[in-house]
Amino acid sequence: MRDDEPVIVNGVRATSLPRTVVDAVMLGTFESSMEIINHVLAHGLTESELRAYCAGRRMEHARIESVLTYANPLAENGGESLVYATTIRAGFAIPELQCEFENFGHPDYPLRVDFLWRTDDGRMIVLEYDGLRKYQDLTMTRHALQENITRQASRDQMLLAQHVTKIVHCFAEDVYQPERLIAKLDQAGVPRLPQPRVLPF
Image (cartoon, rainbow, N blue to C red; front, side):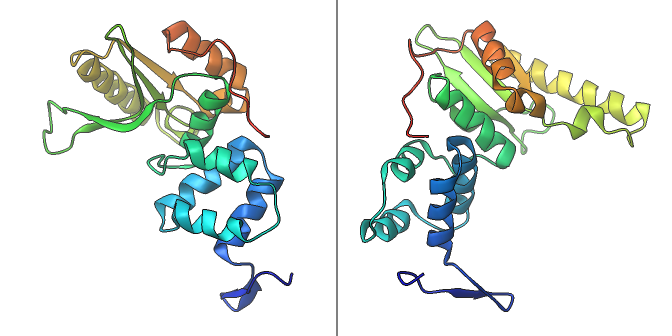
């Protein structure tokens, strides 16, 4: 590799962070690329630095530009980034991320929802990515499981009391089988384009 200076990470020669990110985008899917881009943007690398790195290199820029167009470093983990990318590919309206609502029991700790759509007709639709562990960890006692379910129900009630009209919970299985997530969002009435977005992936 003659066009990139290596860096030393824990004593090992490696490609630079911009080069590693660009390589991953060029070789990956839109969903995996969104996961990577959101993470690095949240941890110090900027869009302008990535674009500057790409500018002087002979490469197809469509992929990196399409991910940067939609990237949002507010996604708190890889699962949320995958959910976000799935909604984009399917043609849903772009949601807001990590929006805050009042926490009636603990005002100093507002409720933050993973995704929020505000529709033209005044509805607010929330999507929460719940992963797997919370409800299916076999090491949990029945009491701990019930506490999690009760806590989630209380949180949902507080959101509904603040004019949220629909709350959708999705899990890892819904991301790995995206038709399940798409069906949930359609059923909830999330606005959607007539056709899926055209992406170079």
